[in-house]
Image 1 (spheres, one colour):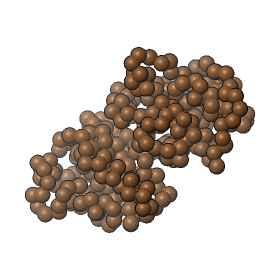
Image 2 (tube, rainbow, N blue to C red):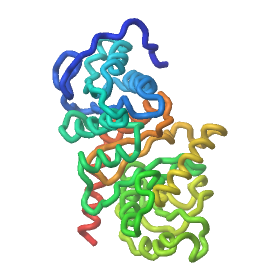
Image 3 (cartoon, rainbow, N blue to C red):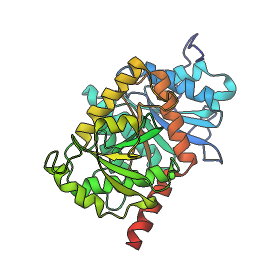
Image 4 (tube, rainbow, N blue to C red):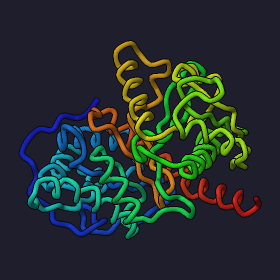
Length: 336
């Protein structure tokens, strides 16, 4: 249960990036995870983000949060935590600007900057996807060969789970972009999910040869010729029903437009009729192909959704997953 926010909100604490309530700068320790949380991101921010931050702190005693946004919202988290836990909270105030959109987007930019400067290990935002992707690409840099970093979402399926990418970052990719996304997805399935020889499929409207738009008609030959990291292999065309069952592929690549449509449809369906695996958070996606760990949550994410997203970011950091994926891809590319 989340401890309710009661009593008077503590006065604003104007501390530098990475400084805790005691005034000392946090550093990474074994087992700890320092997550920069964008308090302004989301349809119901900052209240729902505060709720998610509190839930995450209470669930993980080794978690440290850098709360980026209005001081009043950050102080609400501090006021609700026991004094002994307040040292795990740092704040990075954002001053309102004109127009309002600039103020909101400055939250995710500042959170990304905190990771770039070493004050945090990962970023969590439920804000504007375009602003998050752009901030991460510019602030952290892209991995070699990655032109358009994709958002990768883990979906519960009848068979277990499946990685779908892109789900909203690159809405009109070319063949080379989708090919790189297949490499990234295969590495993800191997490193994060422990899948041996990940099966990679291409989402389309039919499995017959020649079905789909120009991109889908051109991609099968390109994907079939790829040497995928982690022992991955291209298994051919898949349809939306194959995504639900999870029987054919472990990774499904598509453009960000259709991926986002499918993702939101499945999210709503699972919310209405139940998910086959409720323990798998369906409202958090990892931005692949950048030099850091960036987790993006759905704008309509609830407090529990955001808490799960923060926990996901912490898990990825503790696994050193992003670095392991990059090393796997670079090793595979160098050997080919």
